[in-house]
Image (cartoon, rainbow, N blue to C red; front, top):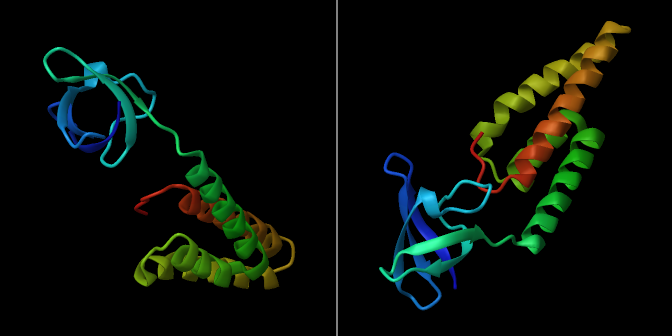
Length: 149
């Protein structure tokens, strides 16, 4: 049967699933068979035991969403590379949907790193390392759904 996790309590190691039939099933961490941790809104495949408890739970991978996420990450890399600190701001606000307040500090730091380019050799190295850092960071933010950073 397929369903969706409605919630999972880390402290008690148990949760609730909503099945495709609309019925709710309880489960514990011990019946979780996937390598990822259980969390709210994950689409899952599971079986039901004689006590109406969910067992043998596996995450259903959404390859279309993963492909879109990867594409957004690549776009984020390109925007950051070609537009520098402005790309960092655009990547975080538009692509990763971070609030503007959360994008300001990384953008300002990237701007300061960009200014160091006027210093021969050392400034160029700092700029290159800083821009590569923000390219990777923005890629990760764009590819991780429901991130908080």
